Length: 412
Image (cartoon, rainbow, N blue to C red; front, side, top):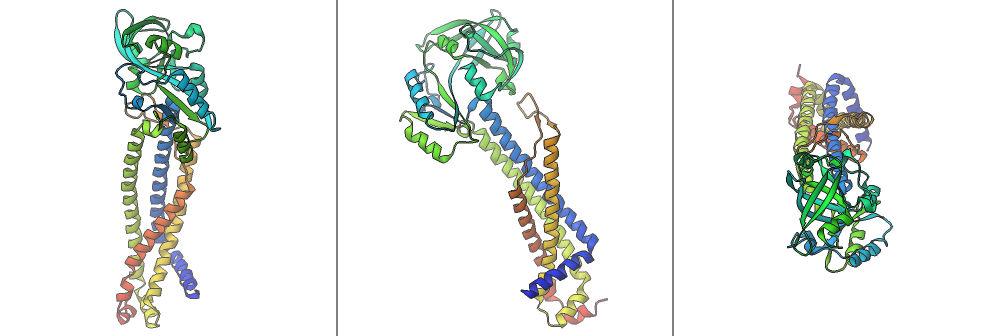
């Protein structure tokens, strides 16, 4: 044990003796560490941002519906919808869980919308405005007009996506006509009033989006059913125990789907970003490895006489190599610590100052740059960089074992 402490102490002195070279290598390790943690912070923030936009964008944490409804197997509107009695039973079942924040009935329908001169297709959502407001707030931007209300006089009011309104040349207050297939299979028309024009943040969705109060939508479809029940929770996500509890209580013909199952694009995004991070991490670790390798090799070559003297005194070559390993550990640990401090600083700056990023493909608005900080990942990064340093030092110092003692002592 005393030998280890001795070699560790000597290694620290050697780091200070070659201070400029050690500082340069330490800086390279720090840049690699900061880059890894900053990239990871951006990726984690992206995951959280996408999750937030999905959940708070209206999908909720999970949805309940008949199995056939999730398969889109219906031949006519709400063929596999949930009746009033079933919705009441689902609400009572969900009420037993204190983590449930809001239960939102939804009716999805498609059809044509016309102002007499122009006709366009739409995909509509019938919803309860007050519940939606309490659950999600205004999850889309009102460009013109106002949000929907629950008043009986407002049941035939609608919101349209920006692009859909532009294609119809419709303005707030205009009277429009909706045409859709009813639950009976026949066509039904309904005169409505445009109350607001909105932007959902997704260009494609703005070209077909329509929302109206649930009662108005049910009047158009001629049904008292709903398509799905959307559930928002107080906690960040649905636990496995809660999922199993709900599945146990659900009627056999009903199914539960989480926000991730409803939006497979999230898992695709995770896979894509993980692949990019692995490539970036591999490159940065390789740079750190080569930098440490170069530093240790230079140190070994410059200290050949010193190493030869130690060998002549009978000191085990493995102990000498251990000294170089300790040097590498010091350099990597300090570099990783400095890199973590830089990454933390970048995270604080991204929080304090609003830095807007360009709108992603398919989106109509940018988003603020965020870099999440994770002490756990900073620790992992330090450990990995130290292991890379140990590997580089052990590989570079293999010359110690092969060194000819007499030649080393006589080295000028």
